[in-house]
Amino acid sequence: MTVVEAVEDKAGAIGLWKTIVHILKNLAPKDCEYIIICEDDHQFTDRYSKKILFENIDKAKETNADVLSGGVSWFRDATRVNDELYHVEKFSGLQFTILFRNVFDEIVNTSFHESDAADYKICELTHAKYFIFPFISVQKDYGYSDVTPKNNSSGIISDLFAKSSESVNVINKIINHYNYKVGATPGFSMETYSNISIPTFIINLPERIDRRLHVLEQFRDKDEFDIQIVEGCKHEIGAIGLWMSIRKIVESALNNNEDIIIICEDDHVFTKDYSWEYLLKNIIEAHEQGAELLNGGVGGFGMSIPVSQNRFWVNWFYCTQFIVLYNSVFKKIINEPMGSSDTADGLLSNITSNKMILHPFVSIQKDFGYSDISWINGKVEGHIDSLFQNAQQRLELNRQKFENILSK
Image 1 (cartoon, rainbow, N blue to C red):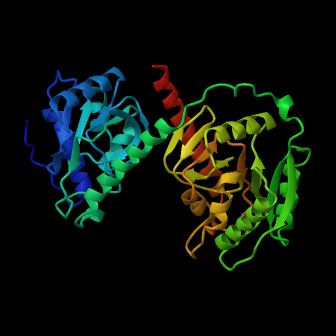
Image 2 (image 1 turned 135 degrees about the vertical axis):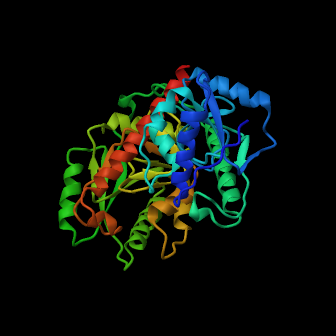
Image 3 (image 1 turned 180 degrees about the horizontal axis):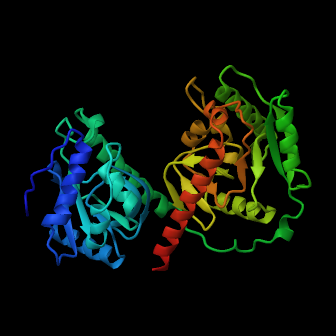
């Protein structure tokens, strides 16, 4: 163990980065495979043992790891590799970090700016990133931070690690709950469902003629959808009007004893990946897995966990231009109150934990240059397209990562 005097800088993040670079350039033994960099707020958890540490270092080495963290305060897109090792796309917290030699030069030769953060920068520079769980390291909460000003308050750090741990527990629960399905549904035949059409309700304000013409064109010659234009409920807060419209549709579906419905907004666009067989197969499979909501395409989401080759479980999502709702969620929607700061996608995310996203998407939103719901969607040109593209890319990376782990 070597205690290193930190490089000081008026920007704490720059000082930390300079210190890491100094360690890699001047202090790391030339023949070492990896080093551990430890900050002075590191604290071993009860889970720590020498055996656990070195077993996971060996497992990470087998995957040509770049980085292995003993514990993270936040993460995005984590995939379980085995009982204790998790691949992660992005994380925060460098209080106990194993850096492998193959990334030393990359870190040393990278420029670092005041707006950067050391943990995010390392994530940006590396590909094979992992953490150990249960965590063997957390940060001691001193009530202040030398690097991150927003953490200058007692209890924040402890809460971050607690929430991060709970998120990993959720991942494990979902993986254990759903059976990852590969291939065709046994006995599935399009001939069996040749006469089926799904009740599809399209929300449209009467004055939005351009949108109505657009969405009707999307469904032209698609007899698999029994479409009905529903006049959208008006409210000074657009999100509340949308929720009122959704609830009105669901009440009607419940009264008509519908098993399944599709709710569609008038900016919906079918993607090149849409086919009736693809959609129907996934609707049936999602129902078999207990889904209450299947989203045809989203602009954003939180955690995503593959539950089949074409479906992901998510903890939350946004964008509701094409959603499949199953009968089991109808009453939950009808009974859910809405506050002035709520959104329809936020409420749907909270109402049920059994929600999935279809991927590749069958639906995205057309950018009309204005939005009846979200002001930013009408103010920033190209904003909608970039949201859906980024969401698709994240899901694709997560799916590839998961299937690579399965193959091993």
